[in-house]
Structures are given as C-alpha cells and as structure tokens.
Picture 1 (tube, rainbow, N blue to C red):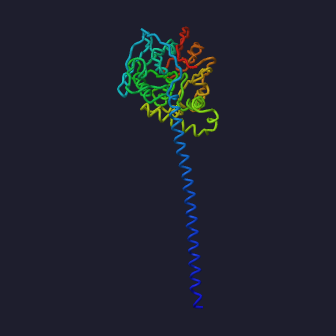
Picture 2 (cartoon, rainbow, N blue to C red):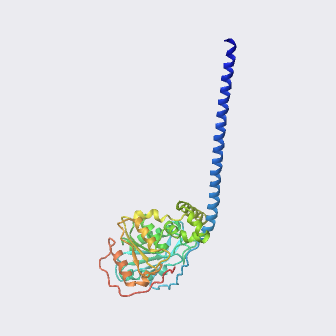
Picture 3 (spheres, rainbow, N blue to C red):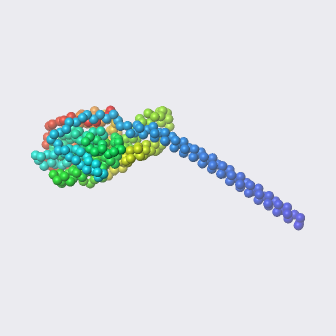
Length: 363
C-alpha cells in the first residue's frame, strides 16, 4: 500500500501538467486567431484610409470647381441709391436701394444674388416687385462686385458662413434704416443666394417670408451629382460596387477637406430647413434645370414640411431662367407671395412692364 502512493501522485502531476499544456496551447491559438483577425482588420482599415485619401484628393477639385455659370453684365441704375453695409467682421458690402419716393413702400425685399453675380442684377428679377410697390435692397456678397475683398478667401458656389454673415448684415441694415423701419422684410435669392436667403430666414425672426429661385443645399446637391463626379475618377463597374454608406463617408470627407482648405465652414443648409416649417416659403425651379433639378428642389421642400406650398416648377426653364420663360406669371406669383406678408398693403398694381432677366445660365 505504501509503495503505491507515489504512483498516484505522479499520475496527478502528469494529468495536471497535461491540462496546463492544453490550456496554454488553447490560449496561444486564441491569441494567434486574434492577432490574425486584428491584422486583417487593421489592414482593411489601412486600405480604406488610403482609398479614401485617394478619392478625396481626386474629388475635391471637382467639388470646388463651379458649374459653367455665365452672368451677363448688368447696367447700373441711375435711380438707385448707392449704399454701404458693414458686416459683423468689419467688411463693407456695397449695394443699391431701389426706394419709392412717390408713395409709402409696401415692404422691403432683400435680394441675394447668385454666385459671381452682383447687386445690379436685382431689378432683372425684382422688377415686378418694385412696380408693385416694394422697395428692393440689393448688395454684393464679399469678394463679389464692389464689396470688400476678404484676403485669403476664395468663394465657391457652395454657401459658407461668410455669406451668411453678409446676409444678416443686410437684414440688420434694412431693419434699422429710418425710412424702412417698421416695414415687413422679405428675402429673395437666386441660386446660391436662394440658399442663403432660406437659411437667414430660418435664423432671423425679423424676416417675414422668403422666396428661392434655384436655391440648393450642399449635401442634397452633392448626393444628387455624386454618380456624375464619381464616374469622372473611377470606372463604372468600380462605382457600382461601392455601398451607399461608403459614398456618404467620402462626401463628408470631401466637404471637410474643402472647408479646411477654405478656412470657413460650409453652411449646413439642410439642417436649417425644418425651421422654415412655420414660415412663408416660395420655391421656384426650372423643369429643364440640369444643375439644381426639380428633384433637388422637391427634396428641399420635403425637409421644410407640408406647411410649405409645393414648388413652382416652370416648364422649359433652365437654371434661374424662369422669369425669362414666363415673366408675367413669375412677377404675379412673387407679388402675390410677398404681398401676403403682415403689414404689406393689399392693393396690387397691375403688372404691365416686363423686363427680361439676365440670369445665371447653367445647362
């Protein structure tokens, strides 16, 4: 009996050693699996980073390169009063005030011009409003026309916070000018100016109503034109393999990198649109607009909500050409829309004079 005890102890030690070795082997195998898995994940992340960097560098130039806008020169109006507006960051914006001296104005419409446009294009779009008794206040955005140039800033066709600073300065000027005090204020913008007008209305309670002709949001327009941009840098079969969420990440990175290059945030237009749900909004789009298509305008309408009337889609009109196609109906709708602002006179003079617009042209 005494001689058999050591044998039992040896068996136990052998069994314990074997179990320990098995445990070590299992742990080692698990660690190897995790190392392999982690290496694969890190490798995929590295490939994704490299892929995104390449895509962003390829797409950003297309993103920042504006469409082929052509803005015809506009003649100065000798009857308009030249004005200067100081912005919150110390720049001087120059523009014009088309003021009624023969009768009290029904309201003041602040006009926001298109990218590369000027304040002198205002009356080509607002002639009907002026003839109906509204004062028209127009200004040049910074780095445009006669306004001050901000060093180091190169404006794009995408709306930035710099343009928003300019619009709010114009609203404050309209609200504080003695002969305009107490008048209802409306905003009317074309193309990028339409986006600025919508956001400013959402941000500023002093504005009663806003009309946008061809306005757009950065995200909405980017997503709509993504296939066109993508096919410029990658083959179609490659693009078709890219999931939608990957494209959204790429677009976000493109937007972020462009903002870093410009030194100013792009204004998140879509984020502000729901706040227009309780405001008076008129959206105009050309059915033949290949840039800000009617589909883009309808998407903006959906973000504003059902309280906003359906967009007016003008048959045969290209980008910002609606008034050229149907000037009488265009003026009638604008006058009726802004005439409904609280405090605006109810009497609407008959529109008889038509001046063809000189708009931005983008096919």
